Every structure is written in C-alpha cells, then in structure tokens.
Image (cartoon, rainbow over all chains, first blue to last red):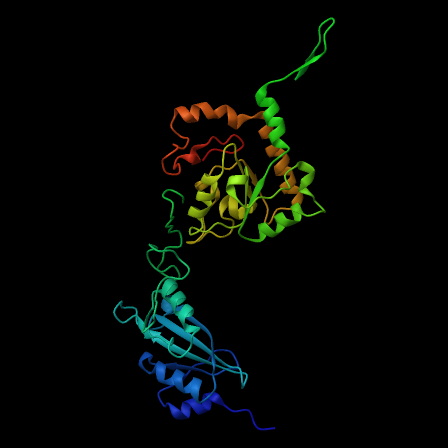
Length: 162
Length: 191
C-alpha cells in the first residue's frame, strides 16, 4: 500500500502565498487572497482530484475582532482520495470591495452556495451567472446573518403581520 | 329541540334551522391539512387508525381549499409562506374554521427570527389553538371536540348579516377580501 498523499503540503509547495490556519480538524486549511482563489481551486480540482465542492459558507468575524470582516470558507472533498481541504478568503466590509470571484465555472455546486452567502451575508460573487436571493424573498432588505442586522427586525410580506 | 304532540295527532319534533345545520356540520368537517413541519407528521397520526379522527367525522382530508371547511395549520409559517396561507384561507368557502396546531403556528414558537411569522393569527383568524411541540394526538382530538361544540352553537353564522352590512365579505367581481381577518374570535383572547 502506498503512503497517503499530503494534499496540504503539495498545495503549499505549489503556491507560496498560502497561509495555513488551524481549523481544529485533522484537515488542512489555508488562507489566501481572493484574487488567487480561482487558480488554486482549479489546481485542486484538476491536479489534486478535489472533485467536489462540499460546502461554501461565510463567517461574519466582526465580533471576533478579526479583519477583514467577512471570511468565505470553502470545503473541498476528494471522492477518490477521501480527502478534505479548506480554503478561506477574507472579504472587506466596504460595499465595493465586498466581492469574491465565483467558482461556478469550476464547480456546479457553487451556484446555490454562493447565492445563499449573498443572501445571508451580502458578499457578491464576480462571474456568478444568476446571483439572486435564494432563501429570502424578493424585496427583502439587508442580509439577515450579518451581525449588525437587528435581531428583532421584521419585514413581513403582508403589511401589519408582525 | 322539543317534542310536541296534541290529542289525536302525530308528535312533531321542533327545532331551529341553525341548530339543525350546526348539528349536521359538526359531524361532517372536511379538514385541509396545511402541514409545513413536524406537526404535519403528528397530524397523520391523528388520521391514522390508532387515534382515528373518523370517529368524529373529520377524516375526509381534502387538499383543495374549495372542498374543505376546516383549515388545520400544522407547522412553522415563514414570512415567505404567509401570503400563500392567506390566499388558501381566502379561497375557502364559508362557513370555515381554523385550528392552529402547535406552538409554531400559534406564536412562532422558538423561531423568533427574521424569517418566521409570529403566529398565524397575525394574518388569519383562528378558532382553536393547540399548544405543544408537537401536540399529542389527544390534544388535536380535544381541539376538534371544542370546535364541534363551537360549530353546534352556530356563533359564526350569527355574525354573517352584520359582516355583509359592514362590507367585510367578498364582493363577487372584486379582489380577494383583505379584511377577511376581522372575523370575530370567540374562543380567543383579543390582542
């Protein structure tokens, strides 16, 4: 039996700008600038056989006293190697900078995940084919999972309902 | 009701039309289960053979609002779902009744957040509230019996002429009524 590969090490040798962070899991995780996301993801998919984007989520770190405010977390899984790897992209709070390149051209699953992150956190994904709210309704204002969204704020569809 | 009999004639059963109608209606409810969460599963147990809602004549479940007269809202109603529920209610024909099954439908339950309607009585009138998360089938049957008592009294029918006079009932060629939610709630604490 061959030794299991170390995908994190392979990735770090290829892209020197990756900064490892501790995920409190056995799997490697790397912090990287948003501009480099697509090339790293392409390498993961095409060379390291990470064929599944298992999850894509976001963290509003404003109460964790971290900068930048948002962190988009990518969860890649390799069905062949049974291996998992995380990437994290920091996203600035300012509206013009609050954007990340979309992974839709590489992973079909990214489509709905990115719509959800846009809906809940207001992070835009450049190059997404249909960046529209997925859970909340048309006309909903704001992004409810942002820490500054008032927990008691209601936007009923029927006037006076709440 | 009473029995009258004179000398040399057959006995006559006397009653009021409303009482007779209420008596007939309470044994032939056609529920529309509006199940959006786990209460919907619990309602299936009520319809099933162990609890057997057919003992009370309310087992013919209809999935069309036009063929039913009892709306059972069983589950969480989100803000996005609220207009759908309102439209379903508006499409039901009079006389109609609403049972709010479980805490989510009654008050939002523990979903006190941006997405959840804090009780269906914000948009439609409710006749009976059932507490529980989810309620036991016995509680649902209890609510049904309470509703049957209410129907037998015919309280809602007595309200009809005044509602027409107030312009609260739908106009034939107009839009669905928006003031429908003003129906009196006799079993409910007023907000």
